[in-house]
Amino acid sequence: MQPVIVRHKPQPERNFQKTNVAALFVTVELYEILTSDSRHPGYSSERERLMIINIGHSRLELVQGDITRQSVDAIVNAANSQLCGGSGVDGAIHSAGGPSIMADTQKRYPEGCPTGKAVASVAGNLSAKYVLHAVGPVWRGGRDGEPAMLASAYRACMKLAVELQCSSIAFPAISTGVYGYPIDLAAGNSLKTAVDFIKWHKAPSLVRFVLFSEGAFGAFSRALEEIVPQ
Ligand code: ADP
Image 1 (spheres, rainbow, N blue to C red):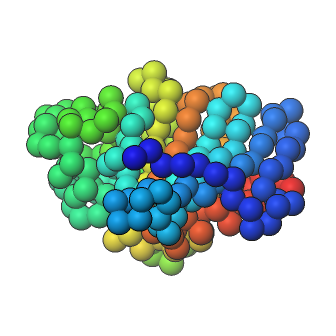
Image 2 (cartoon, rainbow, N blue to C red):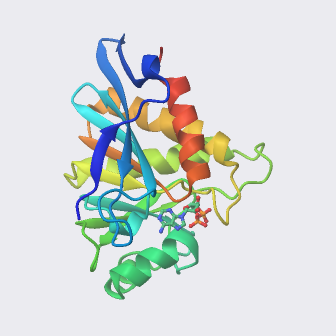
């Protein structure tokens, strides 16, 4: 059954904001997705959340979910610099997308990909045109260039997406798993980088951050509320 999207109303005054920021029209909408399930016909108590901001003609979304289930032009993988497969997002993408993703990646980039950069491969069985393998930094306390490297990994993906004529892209929270980047710091950095890119390039049309846990969604939604002026 299709999820039903309703407006979320915990703080009515903050649910819908319109702000003119640097000549770009930004709107914020908060939704709660009530997912139907077989045990509870109609609406279940299972709730997923969605936050949307419109920046000019582009849209930035936060959703709680699984990156491998997104239908977008480009799905971003949180890869390691050897591009040799791992756990977390990488494991999920190779498992859902099938062996052609690894075969294509190894053929095209036998030397791997440096930290802060990204490369593109086929998307195998995923509902996307490309997988963009981005290498985020390992967190070493924050004084080893991690913020610049994280921003660079996001920018590299968005640049690649534009070059490959992808109008929609889905990101996981790069570096916040095995690589240990604190989620609150990563959220602010990642979102600012995406918003700045959209403002400058007026593309891609859709940038979706797919957050795996409620905690990650909370961190990103708080960070987004700080970035978008009240
Ligand atoms: P890194 O090595 O860059 O830290 P990880 O894959 O370990 O990458 O984790 C990055 C983030 O992705 C973590 O916040 C993790 O919870 C999340 N994650 C793991 N699996 C998925 C998935 N299937 N979809 C979306 N996010 C996921």
